[in-house]
Length: 202
Image (cartoon, rainbow, N blue to C red; front, side, top):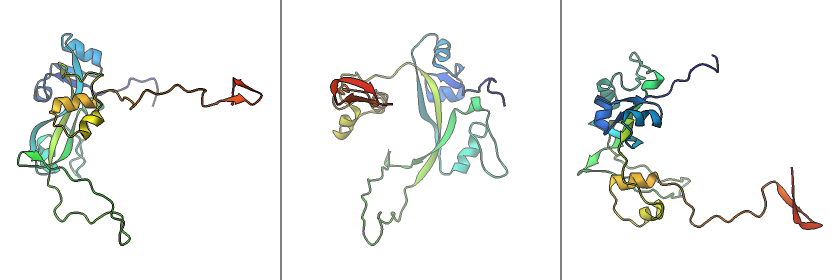
């Protein structure tokens, strides 16, 4: 295969929400500038969102979304072109009382030659749902860079809505304290007879 041939990129839908991205997008674009042109110059952002109903089994979801996702079942193998791979099926914990069950953190036991405790008798019930990645028209509320770090908000235990949590995950990584400048490089040394002179080690 030639290295100079055209590359196939995923063409993501451009829409205002996940439902529109799946059913009737304004168009599809591989790059942000192309998506912004389709959006008429409005602000855009790349996101992944669940869409559609929940299914009790992966097989049921594959039957409904035939042609949208790749099917690896024997006798029903289906592979999508690279540009159409913007959807995938995800296994989620089933909702109980309107909320998804979250597993408690397990601590190692280190007893009787076992590192971890026995798994629970009742595994978490799961469902399958379609996830779609697309260019959303209109930006979510951004968290200012001078605000608290995401880890501090999480450890504080304060409740936050989905948009706030999404904005926190898009926040640039910031250190606990400003990084101090290095005196010398990794491959530099100071000569014993003249410590004020730095020379290359390699």
